[in-house]
Image (cartoon, rainbow, N blue to C red):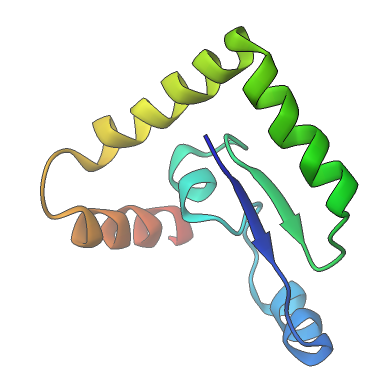
Length: 95
């Protein structure tokens, strides 16, 4: 399990919000169509990230759930050729 952090310049953030019409920014979440990995974008709160990490470490059920959700990604991408498959899946989602 993991978290995703993105910090952009103000201009990149402004343009990205207006041009990219996707509900998630991480490839994992885009491909699975739901938030499996926590995304922290632009306004990053270190304490919140630490709490999230600690909860994953201390809650075996939550850890197992996240791990199982990440296994679904392997089913989507299969073995080998993951980059091409991910690109094709993203193209499908974007229409």
